[in-house]
Image (cartoon, rainbow over all chains, first blue to last red):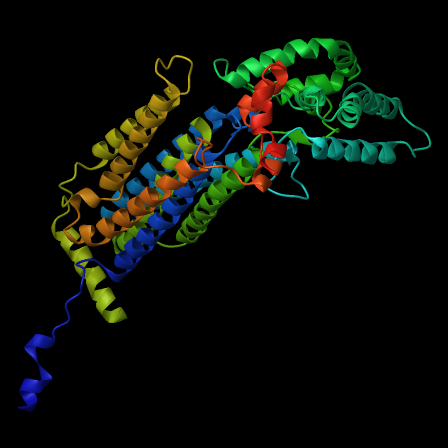
Length: 349
Length: 158
């Protein structure tokens, strides 16, 4: 009786899944992650395709080659972590560690490139929200007021300087010129004849001078831009002067750092980087929110992977560690998977 | 519990020791082939963005999504080893896929509702602060179709 109860044959433990607990947990975690990112990406698609206007990639300083390069980096890192697992299966600990090191390095490259991309956006006032965000949805009176405030702030900063340098004088001249030739006509027209579309044209001219949009040629917006360009001829002279007054050094610097700006026409904000005037990007606010949310969450996942890879550098990665390498590998492939969808959605759509 | 886990791990190691060429999956060459395929596919979706793409933007979107799904399947099948896993894989992947696909399908009506297609209108507040419709900018610049300007102006919706 007692012997029988000590060894009940029916009570043998049967694991629910024929895999290790760690792997089962990781797969459960990944299935929640699939739903997490499906929700984020689905919401992005709703907002993106339901939006009245959405910026073209070059409007918001997105560079497709950089995005493609990052895709390539992540694919390479996926291969290297798979090779680490294969090496560990063959009990070649040092080779496995080498591949983990390669993966760690590639992950760092990805984050570095991502950081560079973020900086290119921050440089142009493309933040998701105030106080840093400079994005205005349309060229209305709020936009004009924001520009006026920025110009006043700049003037208040430069004017009190007692020995003003030639550069300061130049800056003041540029500020004067913008308010005289671009801002004031628009504001005056809005005040005197608010029902006429004239002030909106002038306001758009101001916005395009500060931050020229990249429009597709065949779209109706393209037509609008062409007409905008022809009306811009009216004020081509003052703009020319403004551009002329920049010193050669800044021009050279602009050309040197033109890499991430490729395809984006240069406006006043690019010619005079100290201006940092508010920019008019239709749909820009929603773009910034979704872009930084999606890439930010992805970057956090990359960061977590990198921390684990770093810790793995202190472990002997022989055959006993197959489970560990396989699990972090699964996680890393999932991070790669998310980027496979984010890259076309964010950069190419 | 941890004892069991340890046993399991060592069991796994034993199994692999018994069958060093256990991977009926083709090994490193296969991984490299998948890598090459992923690179080519990335190049293909990048190609849709170039000026050489002969079809419309909508076709490009569909094509890119098809390419992305192919890439995802390659990664899942080969790199994540799901091709060679036992039947337990369906227990986790099918519910998760169903739920995410269902979520995306549930979001589809929102895309339609958010578009200004004549039967779903923006709220007044949204008109006040949202970007102008490109067509509106166009008409404003043309100074021609005042009717269109009126129709889309926020004042009209008050």
